[in-house]
Image 1 (cartoon, rainbow, N blue to C red):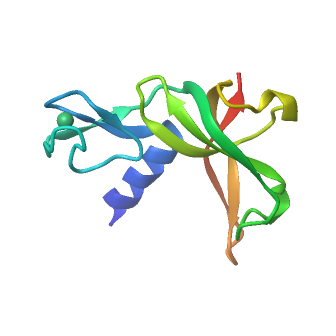
Image 2 (cartoon, helix red, strand yellow):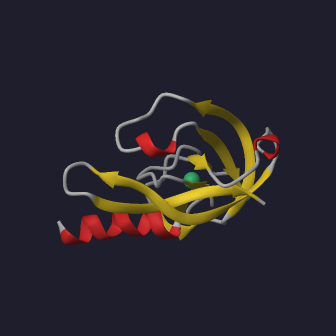
Image 3 (tube, rainbow, N blue to C red):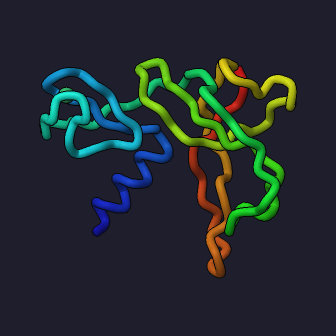
Length: 128
Ligand SMILES: [Zn+2]
């Protein structure tokens, strides 16, 4: 149990995905079986912190836990290794948020957890 939650935390702080030991394909979030070659020999691999926006949308409707942050950008980012991450893009001027823009990962306050009020941190991206 403790190991599992640590692994999940690690994934969000350090952007840890997985790499296929057979063919080298990389994934984020991590997968247990390679979608390229079917191998289950997956190893943890820290993802590159930079990439480009593939597509994005601006959300105006608050999601639970994100009420204070609307509107915000939700983007599909392709990292330098080809792995794709669905992520928030923050602290970037509206005109800079566009398809093909270079972005880099940063650790930010992600949301406040329900009734406990615990602040959860996670990765977000800013336009580089
Ligand atoms: Zn593979």
